[in-house]
Image 1 (cartoon, one colour):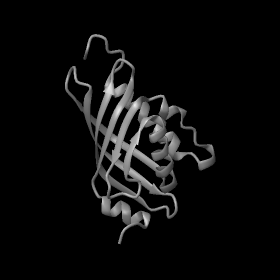
Image 2: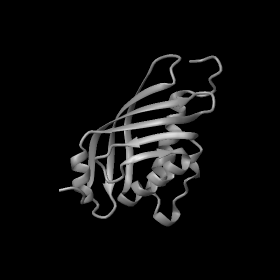
Image 3: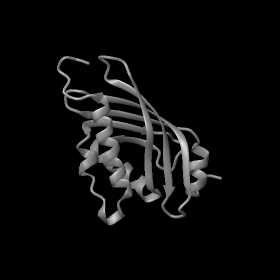
Image 4: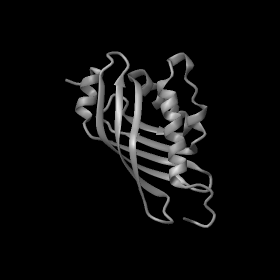
Length: 149
């Protein structure tokens, strides 16, 4: 890692996952975004595939908050499980291979899929700069949410 690094990529990502899980599990009236916001850069960027009902480019903590509201309206559980983090020394980019467990809020249907994320982390400030998720089965997610065909 860079000599001025104060955090490891794993520490930053674990803090994000913890905050995200707590937010998603909370009832809509009890959701508190401050934990997630603390893990994100002010110029954070995340792009969701155009094939999902929550598609789009989400910028900054406000953009991420918009996305988390949308996700939490669809799911009451979004749990990234067993993450394996692949990182090269002195690089701020990492890849996370994992499984994701979803529970659809309206129906209670549960789904488990392989899941991949490309993450760019600022190791000095301890925040995520960019997050790119890759879903295994977008069609099945849409079906469970009642979207698409």
